[in-house]
Amino acid sequence: MRIFYTNPRYILIIHLVVNDMIQVTLSIILFVIGFTLYRINVSVCCIFTLLTLITTENTPLNLACMAMECYIAVCFPLRHMQICTVRRTLMLIGFIWNISILSVLPDLFITLATEPLDFFHSRVFCLRENVFPNPLIPLKREIIYSLFLVIIWITIFYTYFKIIFTAQSASKNAKKARNTILLHGIQLLLCMATYAGPQVLEVIKQGDPTNYIDHLFAFYIIIHVLPRSISPVLYGIRDKTFRKFLKGHLWC
Image (tube, rainbow, N blue to C red):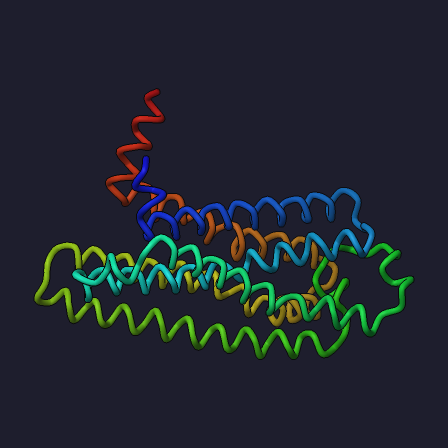
């Protein structure tokens, strides 16, 4: 079991899975509240929404870091242990959380500065646009999402092609890492659909407002739950070490 605490790759995988568990749990709570109580206090909704948004934005950043770790392991195997230490990995996870928090907290600050105090005591259907209604927030969100999109996809493509070139003349491990990066890209593509979510939902709302709640639920399942359901299978069953311990615990 010690390998899961001392290997940067497993630390990033465990962080990804735990982060996604938190995100799915929070979003399910919001949906249950939305479909049962319909309207809740704005202050309570703000807390749940902020935590959900932070964990949502953590996922693609974590995937980009995992791709870089694969790239270093394949292209710089002799320096991998020096570059990818446990301390640096934990610092990287802290950096991921700080970036996500800094990208989300301005929504709260803008709302506090522009909305009256009574607004936070009112009750709304708990959606991001309902608790953060200022028109500057969608503009800020699009700029940040576009920046994230460009940086993360450049990272994925760069590491993937670098590993491809290495795999042509290298070992089986390089080819396995290439396939892993490709799976990162597929999962990332699903996660990135979250960034286009507000625009898609707005189009759906204008086209079919009567069934908007049903469309919202379907969108949530496809965009939020599905990509995060892939992680345990993708990084657990495919990994020999995880499989070994998983079988032991299952039979126990």
